[in-house]
Image 1: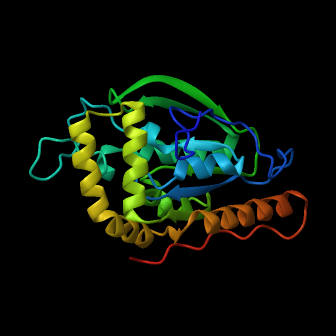
Image 2: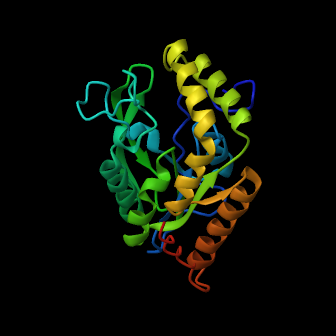
Image 3: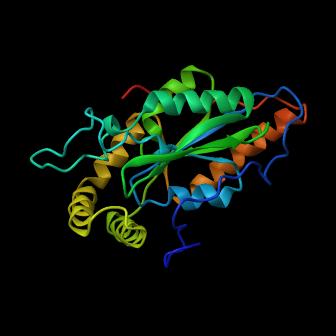
Length: 243
């Protein structure tokens, strides 16, 4: 189901294949495209448009009773926009397992209750390329590159006011948190959106709009397909430049 802005609501289905490239019966390594960007920038919508299998990195949030959760400075609010609210090690392990076997077990996270409500098996078979999307995707770009798993890392960017509106409508429709919390978070993120994009860029994610992101995803998929067909090997992602 899509919201009034054309964005998926609720938890999207977990696809297990791609119309961009056939499932591989050959030992071609699977690679990941990391899709980062501010909350509300359209990551889930764009990932769904690709038709590639998608790993939802938001499902690796820590639970609400975790004592290591960070707080917003000067507030009692949990800072869900801090990478410390997220389990990066588990996310990298899931990506590595998908690249190695095409299958992994992932948590199903309920944002409204800040808890893992179940577990699910994500099976992408041997598809040569998949997308891992979430606001902390850039934080694991270097680790994925060092492990030889990375095809590309992207950061969606747009107008902060547009992102604010999309994010607030989505979060209200899904009842993610209380209205006062969503408003406080929304104003804070709108004021800092450009610095969020700058930080993710420094971590190795290429900043771009949706059209360019789709073009880079298509190029990455085409490269994996060429490798699958036995032509020139697909180029590996370059190591992110030092911040």
